[in-house]
Length: 333
Image 1: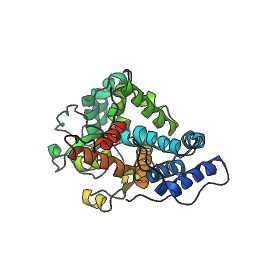
Image 2: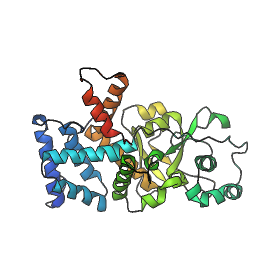
Image 3: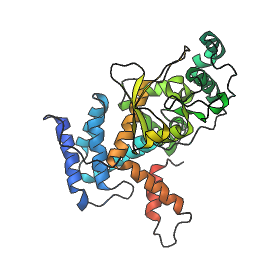
Image 4: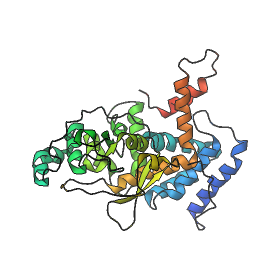
């Protein structure tokens, strides 16, 4: 759960090997380098790029990271590149505002047969371009039996003791500004470009607009698990060869025990509704691992904590650096 130094170069002689060497060199030189005003410390930048390069799925995403590292003229450009991934990948997937969509009341018959589920919800679910939070949540509750998919906790409105909510794997806030003018639109487009790099599917077509609410992108989670998932301190990775089965990971030792999260979870449903897409969970996991191994997660939390403590900017300008770093993380109009 602490920042992890880059391991020795894992790549055989190749363009990937050369790119990773640049990350190792930046890490070695980091103590003597000055941080850029809107980027994390040089050592965080070095580890962010290095861990991202070695952990990214083989293929287009990993190749793109390698090319961008190779094209960076110097250490300053490398740090700017790391800042771009921090702002448009890691921070974009973390701490997003919760959906404010209304939550429908649970059915008094949580085990209603799947043909009734399909009859009730299929028309709206099939037309995903007009899908809303309420319709998706109603179907999701049916699919997941109103239980947390990670801890198994049942919602208190269905006889349990949990507060079960809708968690988006790819955050709902990412595409709110698609189609708008200005920096917000540019930020959203940059986020989708990076997400698309790391998948073999057309994720923008999958999740643009109201499709962000499609069942493959939402999970029932109780409040503590939902918060941990959103804050990138809890993630899931597919178990190879086992369909809809995932190993759970924590950024803080003891978190899973406290939240009653098992090491292995298997998703299942008695309905015909689709289960979460493993591709989206792999993206979320990549973001979490790079964030914590690099120190980027602590950098973001430190800015947010200092901004909370700094209600009024000091007149002598001593808090200006906090403001600049915070503004780099937030898309502005």
